[in-house]
Image (cartoon, rainbow, N blue to C red; front, side):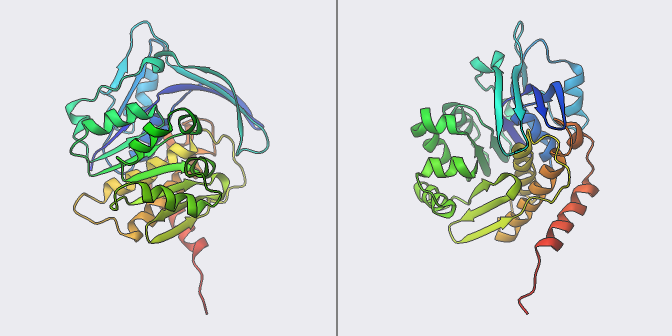
Length: 309
């Protein structure tokens, strides 16, 4: 099933204890699209400025991502973010943010983008997420990501947007903040209770500790893939979401989303995110192969299996 992703397309400048890179290709929609492209057709929607050129587009085209939904704003500058990580790579300091063309972003979806069976609403203003979701009447599965800023300043709109999708993906701190509950499971159950009974899942991103999947009658957690070296965690959450949603899209609209399908989607998201953090920006995922992903999924299955006897 084709996937449409709407969100930021950016340049990032990142410093970690392992190096420093200037003006790398980044943004939530880019990291998501690269990960999801291993499973199905991906249509990316977002704005860029005059500084975004053919070399950046080629990174996406090599993964056969449909870039026709990228809006070039003449005279504008592409969203730019600068951040720094210390030895605790779970936390980062934002040193500079230039919204550029993203500040006035009003998503314009083509007929093809609107007709996608699967839609991922990356971290943008909740009212924009609602507007996009309303345009996608043929969507069979929709997922949404957000952040603490929107929980603080646009909570009502965010809750409305959450209730319009099938899956919410947040980090654990954001989920607790949103629900006002200290327990991760309690917070997820609270969010599930807000919307229609058919909502499928809440996914909590746990950084270096993995991710958890909570549904109305199930709980599943998966550890992060063990790595000796982590270079740059920027985009790991969006790469995870791309793998998770992309795997679901690849199952086809006529198959039920069983607990096992969702669990396997978690494994594929985790595997791709583990490659993302091994190099700066999109470097590793851009040249990743499907056999490498499959091998890591098998390793995850082996590491998490045990016998009760």
